[in-house]
Image (cartoon, rainbow, N blue to C red; front, side, top):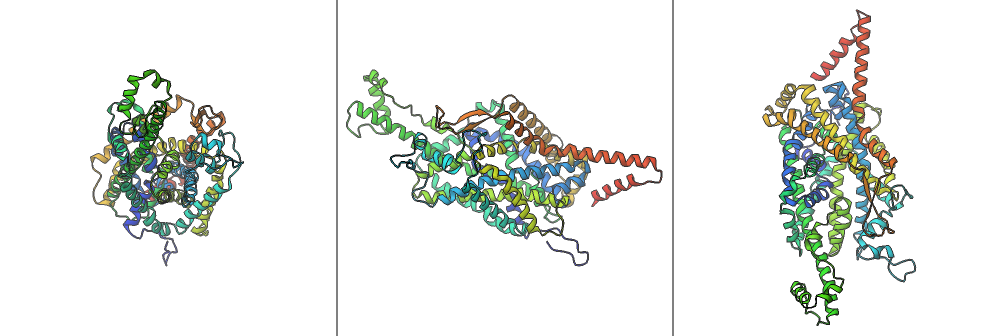
Length: 617
């Protein structure tokens, strides 16, 4: 940032060009969820049918919220706390809530990137370490836990996480995860060391490279055997599933969280824009590209899922063919994958008792396609298992994990910005401390806090943070953002601001969404989410080799003390909203009381005048 020569006041940093701003905003919005959450929702909710509630949520909830945040950031040219304090001192807690949520998301999000680094480092080995089971301690056979599950599961749960059997068994910190976590935070710090100056350069790579890799995967994946089955599964709608209210709830939450609104990062990014800039066009571009990326990523993902399902289906048939060939003493190659159904029908009609006595596996391709996975399960289990079967598996593994790291790193930029800018607004750190030192302090605090996730129970805690930090708090923050702009700042004032920035006032669509549709949808989603969660005690999947259905995960309820922490994670981030409002009201009442006691006191007038001047500025 530059300084004015005459006043010594720091000027606000600016983007080098419009491309930097758009790439940074797109990189923040497009994250890991576009690759592993959206395809999962399409898979479990009827393929193409899920796109209907998803697009409705995008048009009436996602885009209006995105436009609102970009507009207020650009108009007030401040971070989240500064913006909401300028609109009304009573809303200062909204910015603080965004900062707390960004901090909590930072610590677990970068932990996922440390796991990505761990897999990336191992992707150069030949063969890939998750392609075969290791030997046991006596080196007389393979590891028992690995044989009972799969090499992919074993490498993830045991070699990477060394996971405990439940969340209450913490275990010790694992040095390899600590090293990877430190490496991930070092990369974030290096990219962010100069603020938007260094970050603006980094996004040229981090925001564009994932699209290159997705395109390469798209070309390769669509040529794999079984890819067509996966794509047909994706685009074949099951209309009856739209009757399930859970589909609409998940669609609304997915579009809301995937756009990264209410974190404060987008407000900060847009505050570095010129005063006159078409933020409406920016919002539409970012929102449409974000959703288009989800669809674009689903094509290679479902092609690979179809490839994996076809391999499992063929392996299942081959086992049955071997059993039938041995039992009926048939010549080899008589029964093939192509004529299996005809041979089975013939043998079953001729020798029904003998066929019934065999333990043949039920082989159904549709059932294998229905086996869903999301999040870490999709990235570190399903996809890595499919990569093993692809020629040149090391190359595809390296590309995949570099892509994931780039996606996550771009999102981390927005989360860090959502912490640093409010800290500067609150002046929690002295101005004489250089920006590099402030960034280092924040990264170090996040790193030390995230050491919780390097324990044996760390993966369970990541699931807790991932499932609850980015849910209720963001819905509440977004609701107060809309109410604050439309009903506190005023729709007329906001429309005038948009006219000043873009040259045209918002049309009836934007006004209707901001005044009625979007806050109503947020309220409905919030109430529905709370009702759904309140009807059941939350459970989590555990990896327990002693479980009688192992290698299936065992779902157990969270302990009461963990459930209390879940409630705190949902409530504590937003407590600043009522607390700051209450504090401001008390101060205002005390000021008015002093004014009544002293007829010559004009303190209340001074406070009100100062607030009006701030708003005008």
